[in-house]
Amino acid sequence: MKASTRNIILHIIGSISFLSFPILSSPDFNTGQNLFAINPFLQNFSRTILLLLFFYLNFYVLLPKLYFKKKKVYFFITLIVCFTVIYSISNFVFPYEFRPNIEIDENFPLKPNPSFHLPPFFESGIFQFLIVIALSYLLKINKRFEEVKNEKQIAEISYLKAQINPHFLFNTLNSIYALTIIKSDEAPNAVLKLSSMMRYVVTESSQDFVPLSKEIEYINDYITLQKLRMNNDVNFSFNFVGNETGKVIAPLILIPFIENAFKYGLNPDEESEIKIELVVLDFNLTLVVKNKMVVDEISKDLKTETGIENTKKHLEYLYPKKYLLEITEIENDYIVSLNINLD
Image (cartoon, rainbow, N blue to C red; front, side, top):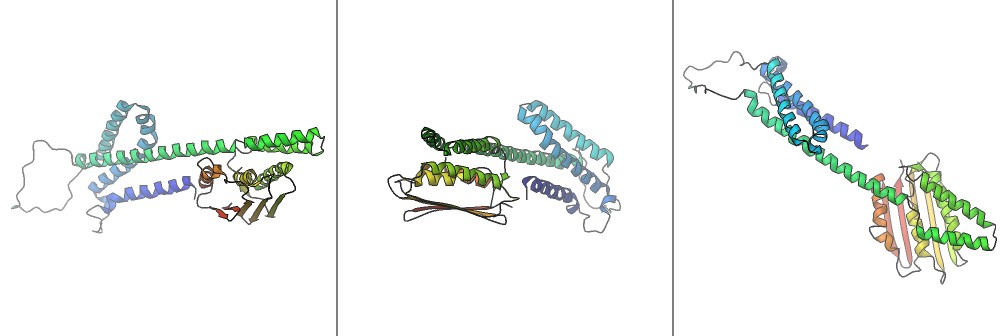
């Protein structure tokens, strides 16, 4: 369920619950009488409706336009005006009347009326009014906190998506340069592949989701360029199984794990092995990347905040409770398994 839909449902449930309170708390609720024909209930119910309207006025207008913009004097003056209006309307439309047919025992001692007393609504009304203010304030603070948190996450993800690994770029340019020196026929194709990848990063990575076919094309281009620096001692394979048609994925969400395998799984002085398998069944995507550990230290980047933690944040933000990431080390093998529900 989308966050916006969930918020609407919560507001509807909250509003119904708030409006139900004067009904359920009325002393005439279980008497069988028509509550809407009883004057004290109508006054209380109308006041509840006005307080609900004030809640949204305070939440969407007064707090963001006045309170959080340091116009607190205007904010508190507006609160006083709103309280006065709510009090006046509810009492003017439904003036308080004593309930009829109430017998009073003549021997029952009655206290003399004080010379001055607050209106019946005032004492309970001011308390309800303050509760509404406090509730709308707390919810607005929480909403602002979530907005700032989301903006920070989006900024971090945009930064991650907008960069090409400089190490990869440097090595690729070196490989292309070497091809041009020997006038290899592969040089023009390598330039086109690199150009296609950079275009993808610049134009597509700003989107939340892209066609899965484009992401796979990017991976293929990346692998093609990485093969330029492979020697015959590298046991490499890339297998794709499934149908990518009609499916979308977050751009550049898979490539960090593949980059890591090439960066830390290749060593010109010993036999290397990299195996990549990408399977798409219905809307379930599984990526398994396995590489032989040919260096002393496996990807610090992927074990620190700037590596795997950022990738996890990216996954958590776009695929909450819809992904499973497992990273294991078995003897000399480093294995990454990522499963994503694309639906």
